[in-house]
Amino acid sequence: MPQTRTDPHAALDRLVGVVDALRENCGWTARLTPERLAPYLVEEAAEVSETVAAGQLGSPLASELGDILFQILLHARLGEERGEMTLTDVIEALEAKLLRRNTHVFAEDGSVLAEPDRDPDAAERAWQRAKAAERAARGEDPAGEADPLQGLPASLSALSLAQKALGRAAGRTEVFAHQTHDAAVPGPGAPGAAGAGPSHAPSGAGPGLAPSGAGEATEDHADAIGEAILAQVSLARAAGVDADRALRDALTRHLSQGTR
Image (cartoon, rainbow, N blue to C red; front, side):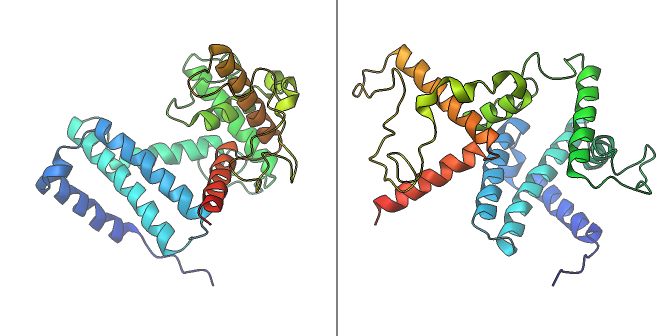
């Protein structure tokens, strides 16, 4: 049964008070800066992802999401101290962004449309239009095609960064999925497939990818392996698979097999 939504205002006010007290009375919290906080936010986001992947969608997820909320409240408090932003600014910025990027649901005045367009494709179109307008306002390429990495966080994992960049330039980079045909994802039961065990490498490693022994890797080897990985990421994107998650799951499977 769905839980009845309760008013979060009082709880949020109490939590803000707790964060303020920590900032003022805890030596560790008092030393925090935005730069020192940033790595913790990345770590906490990863823990949320792992909790969801494990299917722990009740109290464990609430706890992990609370850790992220703590990060947000700390950043807002630091912003207040610098005189640059407040928690209200954070909330209002999010509200404005959601209204701006979801014109299939909201009118210009923020009210819900009499007949919202519930087609998932409508959400994608509205988001793309809003992002294009935002890029243009910053003096960037509205389509984001001149530089597919434009605006993507450099701290993303290489797999996630590649998958997002390929998605932005799908019309031009889909060819990567076909350039390195020997690096195609092996089928079930093939060497290198899931369940084959960590000691089995793909037999079709592609030109220049044959193992050369520890310490003997050349720049050509590195380039060839990079191209092969990029081809696999492109295949993952075309199949609707999160490449980063797929690799993590495969690693977990192989490690669990090795401990049996």
